[in-house]
Length: 439
Image 1 (cartoon, rainbow, N blue to C red):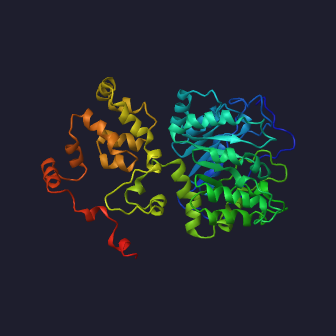
Image 2 (image 1 turned 30 degrees about the vertical axis):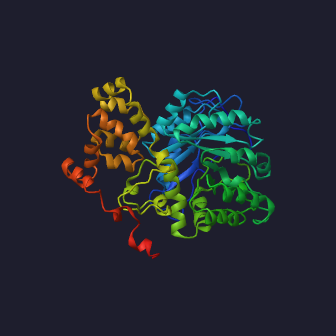
Image 3 (image 1 turned 120 degrees about the vertical axis):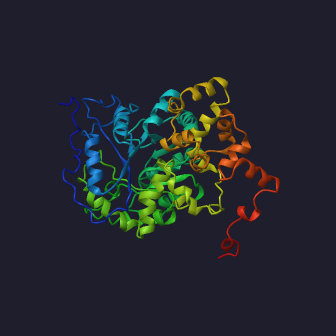
């Protein structure tokens, strides 16, 4: 029996949620949920403002399967403070099907961050809701932001609509991708085109690094109904205005709910009312969360069928991968590994046991295997930059010319002859004719 007793007045999560009538697309992600405790194994933080019911990982996996989803993004809640052990335990049990958003303190070390990254954490959460946390110092948050930047993590912010003006300048100073929880908790009794929500939309319009979770209608509604009609105009406005920067989640197990016990099946049925086309639903539930939390799973990127590539004006240059900000984030650890080979002792360690050396880096399995296979095209598709990859060429005692030839299907002599004759025809580096003709 846990020594922690749930606060009186809060509701326990639904014991038997309905089966949704809306069928989520394959690969759908519940991009906002929690694990709590169990308290006797993962104690709740002494400084917590509330004590939830235990919500263990096994219950979360069962709900995921019941709702027809494939993956989860687990967000550290304030009741566990900066003790991320329950989160890490769930991520390690998920077999790659969950990612995490942690809470860390200003004094977090690089080694601690690396361990969290290896477990599957991809962001940190800053909670500004005054009833849940004490006031957060901006300078400490800025220091945390700087520490996580090399990992390519994003920042999740949780605040209430009335608090946005107070924090607006700080929020917009954050350099990374920023994800807003629950649409900034708008007051849905006010007009969707009113001053308060207009400020939130302005935040998203003017700052393209901001994303939004269109989640938690059960917390925002002012109605006594599971349909949450009053939340629909707000969420639909965000989805249709920013289709490439929206996420959705159940918020299971719904901590601090007193009004009613949400039925997760009905929450899933809320989705087609705010994302009214299959294309919008796929972006909301699959493309966007995969791009943010599993960018290394880039098989679709190679043939240019992923959502991100389709949105970029240079995505259809034949035979070319542009190393832009997104690719830099995806390939950060791969390129850092390559740079480590500039030191002779590291080159020797790598040659002695490639797998053991690669396992020291929080790279994806696909990236590690591409290195072992010396599949440079694959490495580039997974975020590798050719100038960094050249360190592998040197470690193997290869010339740049030889390595480049392996990426073209030509022999070294054939590649050299092609280059001596002026290289590939420039038409191979231009947009397709249909693009040039405006078709």
